[in-house]
Length: 101
Image (tube, rainbow, N blue to C red; front, side):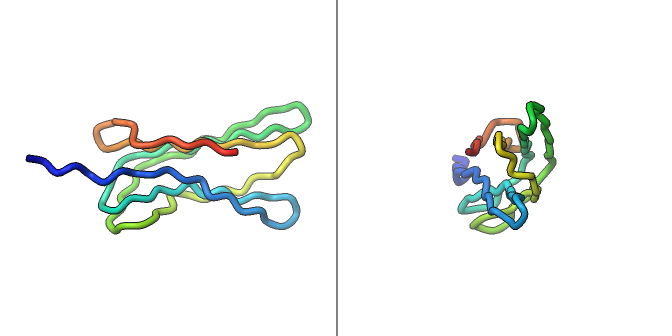
């Protein structure tokens, strides 16, 4: 019998910085070893224009706890921003997805 892998939780940490900037950190959390790929999308709205940034790649998590996958800084415009993190296992199965705000 194959033991089930621990679940993966997707988290987007966001911290306000000075001068109207926001740091976004796509993070995963699990109780064991995991590997796969991730896609992190950031959407910003300013002055009637929408821009997007997509990051992604492979990851390997060897220890229990959290793993930061990347880090981005965005401008906190009056019209807002949003972000979405999607994490896939090594076989392409979707492990988790989260959006903010």
